[in-house]
Image (cartoon, rainbow, N blue to C red; front, top):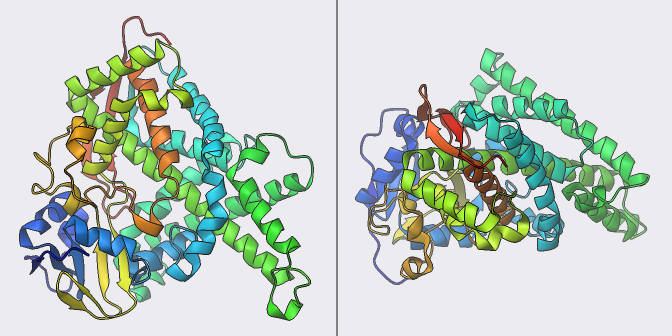
Length: 474
């Protein structure tokens, strides 16, 4: 921890009973961006509860790297676990290391290269379906692309388009009202209100789909598995389960003779939770990032031209491949700058497991700390013209002077996003494919206000006009 003095303060404008929930939900970026003016660690209210927001990169880094003291908990993760289970992204510190080791082989570089083939195929199928002039509602289109891609890398090509569409519908209902569920009193959550019933049906449907696909995939694994099946994420999870069973890591009462039926059921439940976690993280975050990237490019023609020039130079009219990624640095910078301005995961909670001092303030065990990249990412004391879209701010010569923790789009420390390389690769391949063949503009009817109360930061409706570039038929 840095020895420098930090400042603390309190955000003004808390409403009785609501605290700062209203501005946080209605204009979250603006509200969070305003907090550094009140201190490096700022107290806000979530309802009647006092919580603390790190607005300095060193404080944000401390809370993210010390995951034992600042554990995943609080209202956010209570709801996240109720919806997505106890997967690697939502589990507490005590479960995380084991779960991450279980899932890590699925994100080895050799496997990512294999997944890239699926990314390329799905991107190509989408862009080939567009005509010379196309108007799209960006987020649903890109969400479907991301979900098809992550579903195929999770399971296999045997998952039908109808199943993918059903998963998409369930996720849309379940996660669109995430923060409403988070802030609603438990007694109201149990009432048969229409919104509650829709939410419950969506979760039952989602869990039923995942269970059916898992059963089919497990049965397939017992038979003849194809080469593609052996490369997907689920195969890694199933292999880990079988390895544990074969090594006799059951209850103490089994005498080491092998896993019990209860152990296998617990392992199956954990695999279910990991699958839901990967499905959610691998679709919502990619779709949100691509949507905002295209919006920013439509609003910044010079940055779009540079992206097109890079695509033309590297690809020469052919589709982008995994091997091209190192030769697309400007496209990578566009993605990084998009995440700086519009991080998909824009708010989380952590809970202190012991008394701790943060920014000179004593926080008792059980205190909620709100984690958001926004107050740091848009801090004018860290980034020059912080509100501007400037991909070149990520050139090596310009990043060398940034403080540690200045970019936290994927988190940092032990809980850093396990799929960050997967997500960035997909975004770069997709954005390059679009930019190489189309010019991107905003169409009438856009509403870029954020979807209220959604778990991931995305616009309500972004209509884009795609016009094929002369001489770029693909």
